[in-house]
Image (cartoon, rainbow, N blue to C red; front, side, top):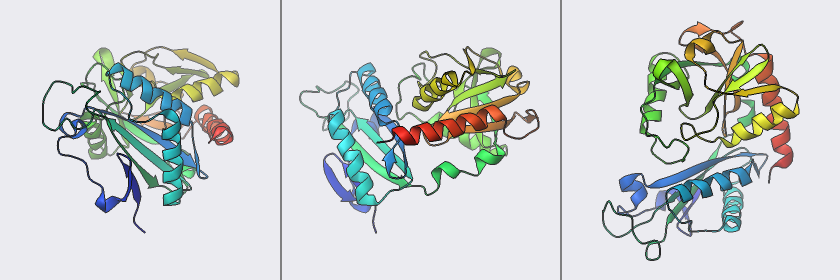
Length: 288
């Protein structure tokens, strides 16, 4: 059966989906996106993703083509039409099609934003075997634009980072600034654990304001774990007891090696394992 996707108000088989060559998301990467996980047919932290989408659009003076209520209804219909139990919903909003290419933004009163959603079926999403063995990461210079807090579709360098990691025999890359200070992963937020303390970079324009990050830190504090939000370096990470990343699709994923330096015993640590367990349990309870 063909996957059904949502394109600018229409439900169409994926092979029939079309957007204009003049859509600014295609020409200018003038678009924002969200990815929401689905477990047992329900959306994980939809409200958080909807709120971040709204913030991203506001930061770019972009107007939404749909309301939050309509967006939720579209998500649910998309899951039903594609029979998704475990998987992901990708959502992209663009500044629309002004009818030609121009650097200047079109008038939002005259040009409605574009919107595309599609599903990705991933049976057993929460049972990723990598969580049992942990990830290996490398560090690479962070040369992205300064507004990393806006979730735009400008993903070329993160894609290059993942390919650099693959070439090096690793699973992912962490971006670093001067002095080896870590910003975040290519598609996730980064953490280390030292002496039982969870350390992760504080929110700013330098990193994405992760929805999973917010939930995990809330659950950690509720479990009486100590959280310190500050920058850390690759050297500090290599000397840590544990490390992990969080994202909507990976949830909480342990990191066991950083630039060839093995952390601890080389196996996922207890803090990351417990946080993954708590996150999945609590998120399933609150799923819509």
